[in-house]
Length: 82
Image 1 (cartoon, rainbow, N blue to C red):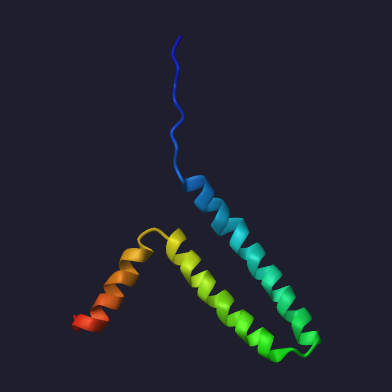
Image 2 (tube, rainbow, N blue to C red):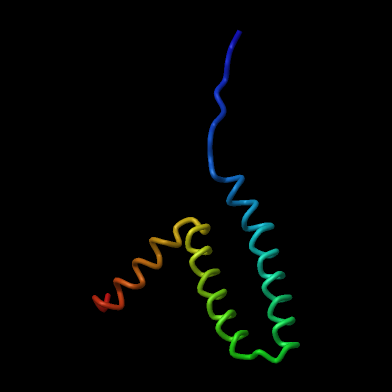
């Protein structure tokens, strides 16, 4: 009798997040922004959208393979001029 151990990887979780979770979060955020716009609370909408955009950038850097290295090279290039 042969026993095989399962191979653990993050490919399934990463695929699910990019395919489902992030678009669903964007839809929910859009609906919340529309409800806030109906109340004419424009200051709250602006601050929420800026925070959401920053959060999506951080999530994207975490999910996309090689993105963190590219961002690090870009920021280092700003200081070194290379």
